[in-house]
Image: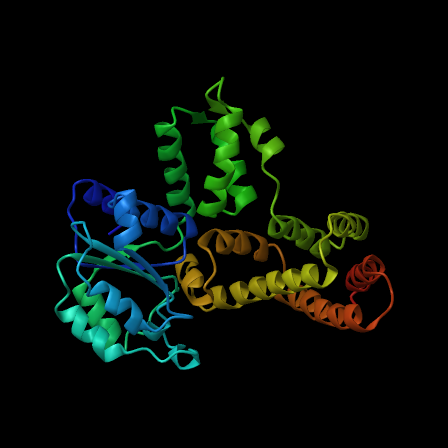
Length: 341
């Protein structure tokens, strides 16, 4: 079930005893939480709402609350966050959770409690009995990151409700500057809709003025400068980022990650992987994969590998040398442009 369908059912009071909210899209998760909480009055929220983080609280504590009868109300609402016992990393958990009692609860949940489990993970361990049982006994809500097209449609629907339009070019620019991240897009729309209060239209100029390019987008531009062996432009872009208080080691780490992604995309595409398969295998947002495919096709694998290794060497120099980061980066581009990086 997607989030719009869930919201419609909640408004119609079509309620289930157990919900599994699976995925990592923060904006959608917040929407789900708000709509469930809206089922209770302020007084009921005080007496009949529980929120448990299993990173610090035993599952048994949440189950005790879920099995309690509502106090001066029709129902209890219990949120469970970070259910690491559903993943392959459960052995790393600091707290031992009573999974057997949870299985018993799943097979006979109280009808006066709505239990909502937020599994903000890319995937669950499908081999586990508890995961299989939970998926069978619960209503699954999908809050995975949206594709570029889905994010654009979500924005259009939101703006339609606000009675505000957006120029097609402005929407494309918003997508680019937020990398199609729905949470970032919706946060920027708060400013943009206020700015467009009188004209009722969001323009390219408004997006250019109000939406700052992300660090990753600036690094994406920097990658193009490096691969073009444009020493002057690359050095200028790097200096601008340093002047914006970006840490050189952080910048280098993002650059290394971007070149690693380009190499992975290049190699896996040669082995027949599609864009959708790349996003799943590499666990990267589909929009970033789309950009990486377009960028990687412009450069040979040998040049990408050369730049990647040069950046690894630059990281060592940043950690051990007393020279200015801007100078070290400029030397890196010079060496790369001469084929010696």
